[in-house]
Length: 322
Length: 263
Image (cartoon, rainbow over all chains, first blue to last red):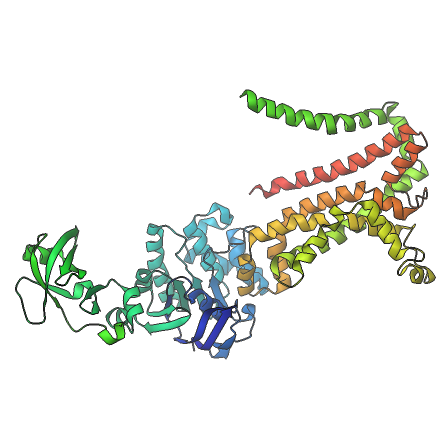
């Protein structure tokens, strides 16, 4: 069940938007499609929704082959990046749209709309028009509208992209809670790795129309499959010929076999986090992320002589990183 | 400050001299000899017939051009195909070509010895010197307005709302009537007003294909000319006023509908 995408390819002229993509989205899971813009994540989402027809490959939703099935018959809920509110309809009519199309009884529609508006905290806004709502409210309205028809899967395109930072943080937590409550298979697109890590159970990293890696947030961070994922999913610091997470570098005050000699260039105090910029012998510049307490313990100062040692085995072997 | 007043003076003065004053004068002349004289001039059988013929032509040409205009705008904005630029240019043809030429072209096709004219006449269908030809001419000259008003609105609303409706289960027809049409309604309304005004006022093309038979193929504009040439100036002014009032009513009806939009 859930969503199964197999060997999907899509070209726009010479531009390869999706290159033989295969993906499994478990029933009831919350998955993020993460990647840089132009990486193919939105195209993949639209292919799943039926808004875009793939050149090759198949899409199976909830055990049924949906390839070639028009969007309106796929039973998907889709939330657009800019919410696509029906501007000439009230919030109530927006949410009721799918139910009216399905010719449900008026009493049933009223009940369901009331329920949904409560769910998205828009009870008092039923008779407003989209233009009278804030960005966050519009987004929740779009979500209620998509959920009204009880979709088999919920697809969201950059759901937080157009919101300001504080609203975005709130909505992330809220979306996760909502997902736990509704338990509907959910896929959302984002270019923000922090957002993906915070909200999703499973992250799919897409780049140049191909999947780089699929895994839980922790897996991607600790065991990136390649250089791209390593760089995209978190901060990196170079040491020798390898890439490490900057908090995986230990600063030593005494030399030790395997440790590289370095000079402290700059110590940046960012609250709990302290960022130490160093120049390794041979001229390579890198940085170490450490805690306030640890920095205090080492009594780090600009120009100080230190030794750097990877805290544990590199997350990415040098060959793979090359 | 002075400069702004000057601009305003020029704009208003220009309109007054070229539009308001002449039209006002026509109104004045029409009622110069009282309402009774005006009423008499407009209740002759020929005037009555001209009035209803004009209404009939507008009632046929405007809905047809509205339906076609919306369809054509959808094709121009939402589809890509070879020859799209040609279609786009063709829509503006009635703007570019003089109505007289349009009238002649219709005669070349539907008239005696015309392309399909003989066949039509043999089968008892008279197009030229008859109402169908005049309606065709009216449709031709008033064709671009709805298209030109609707195209930019369609571009602006984009396709996201329609796609949203699609994912919510709406068929293409449901999407059109529930989402697209309400979204473009003001573009359509404005196009309808312009089409109506143009159809009411058309003279050249209709004049050519009508044959100008009083009481048969004479519209209000043709009646104005006819009376003017027979030195019945009061009658010409009266018919002109009726035309102007019809056009003003059209404009007014849109302005009356519009405030509901404000929400």
